Amino acid sequence: MIKRVSITVLILSFFLILYDFNLVKAENISPSIITNEKDLYILIEKTLENGNEDLTFTVSNTFEGVILSNNKSNENALFDTLNNIMNLLLKQHPENNYIINKSWMISYNPYTNIVNFKFNYIYPHDKLLKIKEQVNTKANEIISQIIKPDMTDLEKVKAIHDYIVKNTKYDFENSLKNTVPIESYTSYGVLINRVGVCQGYTAAFNLLAKMSGIDSIGVSGTSTNALSSGPHSWNMIKVNGKIYYIDVTWDDPIPDQGDKVAYDYFNVTEQQIEKDHSWNKTKFSEKYLDYDKAETNIIPCSISNNTINNNNTSKNSNILVNSLQSVTDNITVIINGQNVIFDQKPILKNDITLVPMRAFFEALGAKVDWDQSTQTVTGTRDNKTLQLTIGSKIAKVNGKEKELAVEAQLINGHTYIPLRFVGESFGDEVIWKNGCIIINSRR
Image (cartoon, rainbow, N blue to C red; front, side, top):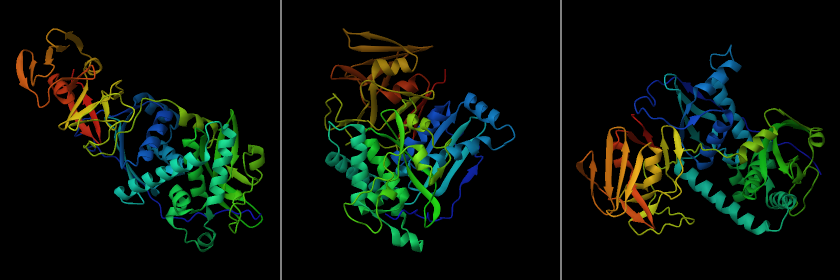
C-alpha cells in the first residue's frame, strides 16, 4: 500500500488581541471564574462544541499569577497562554474546528480580569448549527449500526476505524492541486460527503470515539514516507489504561479500494508510530485525554442570545409541563461567578424563569422558612425579607406588597419561584448574557 501525507492548505490566518476596557465593564458581570488550565481548556472546548459565537469568563488572580510567574519576561503572557490553548484545542479536537484558521478575537479587561473570546466561523452561524446537527445525527446513526453493547473497547475502536476507511475516499486529487475544499478538513466532509483529508479523518474518528466512550484526541505533527513529508494529523487513544495511536488516513488505500482496510497504523505504540511520524509529545500527551473526561463546574453559556427555546423539553426530566411552560435545559444560572446546578430543572412560564425555591434562596445566601398552613415561603437575607405564597401574584418585600407577573407555584411537589423578582428584591443585579442568567450579589 502506498502511504502518503495530505498537504494542508495554508489559509491566510490572523488573530486580533485587544485591551478592551469597556467590553464587559459596562455590564459589570461576574462570569465563570477560571482557576487553572484544565478548566480553561474544558470551557473553551465545550464552547466550540456548542458552536457558540463568543465566550466570557474571569481569570482568577491565582491563575493569572501562575501564568505571569512562569513567563516573567513576557508582557503578553496571558494572551499567549489563551492563544496557545486555543490553538492546541483545535488540533486535539478537529471535530470542533469550524473556525477560520486562527481567526478569533480576544478582549481583556485588566481591571476585572474578564476575558472575552469572539470566534469567526467558516460558515454563517445558522448554517454552522445545521451542519453540526447533521454531523451529530449521522454520527449517532453510525454508532447505532456499528457499536454493540457487548463490545470491548478494542472492538469499538476497530469498528470505528473500519467504518471510516470503508466509507471514506481520500481527497487525493484536490490534495495534489492544493484545491481541497474546506469540508474535507472536517468531520462533515468524512461522515456526510464521505470525502476528506487527514484532519477530517482525525475529526470523524474523534467524534465517533467520544460517542462510544473511547478517550481520543487528535495529534498534529509531520510524517514521512517514500514519496513526501509534511504536516499530518492522526489520533491518540487510551484503551484498557494504555496509550495507542491510530492513523486512519494511512490505513485507507489510494486509490480507494472500497471495503479493503489496512491495519499498519491501527493501535500502534509510540515507538512504532514515531518511526515515520513526529510530534510535540508535551503538547499531545495523556493528560489531555484525562481533561476530556474530567468533571468540572465550569459550563459555557448557551448561544440563545437572551432567548429560550420553549420547545426544548428534557426527555429525562420528571417534571410534567403544560403548553405554557417548558423545562429550560439550556439555561445556565451563575451566582457570583459560580454555576448553580439544580436538582429540579428551571421552568419557563410566560417568558418568566422559575427556579426551585429552597435551592435558589440558599444559593443567594438567604435563610428559608416554609409555612405549610399558608403555603408561604419566607426568604431572609441581611435587611430584606421576602414572602411569596403559592398561587398568589402578590408578594411582600419587607412588608410592602409587590405584584408578580407569574406567581410562585407547586409543580410535582416542588415549589418554584420567579428568579428575577427574588434576585432583584434582595438588591442583586440580574443580567442576561448569551443565554446565561448572571446574578451579582450587592451585599
